[in-house]
Image 1 (cartoon, one colour):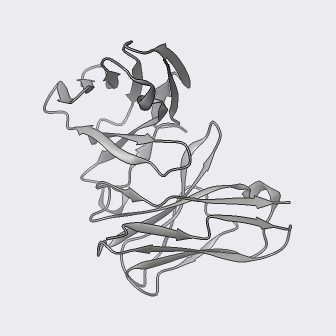
Image 2 (image 1 turned 30 degrees about the horizontal axis):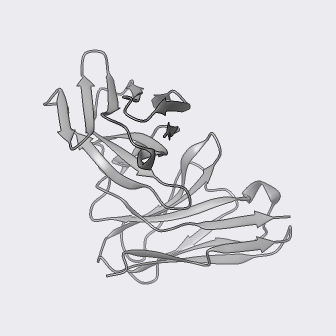
Length: 115
Length: 112
């Protein structure tokens, strides 16, 4: 059972567009929500993360929006560039779950930004 | 500071052969992980370790074994490779469980 549902599976936008990737979760114990970025042939790397005490976090052109009541969070990429073409993974973690404090991953979104 | 390294980068095995993938990290992280990545299936946790000498099963442990004899190394073994184990394998490490994970560059394994 997929505990973090990510959509869409793939996304194509034009340069300058604002791709949005969405994730939804069920476990209300989750309290840490990171996004990882993976370029072809590389391992994933942490891009940005949010905790549920804020509704939005920005780092450069990347923004996470968080809706605690809807149990949803999303990644927005402002002024997208071809260099942003990558696979993006959302994840979630519960801090109070002992050895179950592992990251739960979404299935990933393949983003292509056309020039 | 090399971060997380994996060897080999590529490998082709015949069904039934065995091999070991090596992961090394130089960040003094307690926690280490092995994932496999398949198209459309995201990152699936195979095994993980919460410290030297410990290992634990992830969500897809069958057909794999692991060992963490030294804090900096985490080995993934396939005793009898099967075509279903064709995948890209990633090792990762973190300072604490569930914290930021640092990934290696991956090993592409093909089992024929």
